[in-house]
Image (cartoon, rainbow, N blue to C red; front, side, top):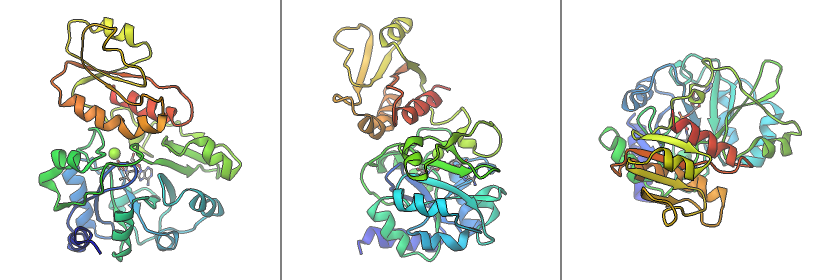
Length: 317
Ligand code: TXA
Ligand code: MG
């Protein structure tokens, strides 16, 4: 086993914080069965204790003891999407400390798809609790460098697994009181992809209450004022006189429009997968760029475009 994974394992066994790579974003990990270790996560992130954490496992068999039951649809979803960017809300068993779920009766679980983190999880005899490894409310990290910049002094170790392949936080799915699949957070696993295997289309969770604070508006935001643009030309004109950073979808605007200080085109081929993968890194770069405003171009509202626009929208609030 690689020495960095051994170091990560040893720190986690001691109850320390370790940043871990996943296919979505980097996580800030601790032993989920230790209230003391989990408290360190909330403290390091400045996260309200009312906002629950996702547990990460290496297999469905490892998940079982931490839940009361595994409904059949979970088995179907696990087969189709795990390891992968899907988090499921399941009734928790007594093995899950209350601090992990912020007192809620359900626990969020997923099997991340990253070789280093899967190897690490197999070395541990507990699941790891891991929110995104950013200070609460800031942009999620998609590289080890992002984590070091934001939380470097607060973690024992950063396990470097390269840039995250998918780039957006996992899709969160649960079941409502009637047992109907409900989506709490959009991600690269779309409602349509879930419908394909469950043969029913998940509905969007509506209520803005306790259940998933990550669904509330002020999230993933750069420090710099950020705006979403449907029409880039108009947005640039509205911000004239300011130092403007533009994150565009597939087209370059800098040659034809005046006043753009810095521009990053996310996918010259118009690939939404590529946009998802690069979006947060672009937001990080722009936020370090001494700009007055960051304009982010809206992407087509199809497939994973919905999750991308959702994150851009949240970054503007
Ligand atoms: O892709 C991801 O999911 C990443 C990687 C590290 O796995 N993790 C992540 O964690 O995005 P975090 O904490 O930044 O976002 C988790 C979201 C939060 O909005 C939280 O409120 C919600 O999941 N959540 C966690 N447990 C929950 C529960 N028991 N009931 C309802 N919502 C829950
Ligand atoms: Mg987060």
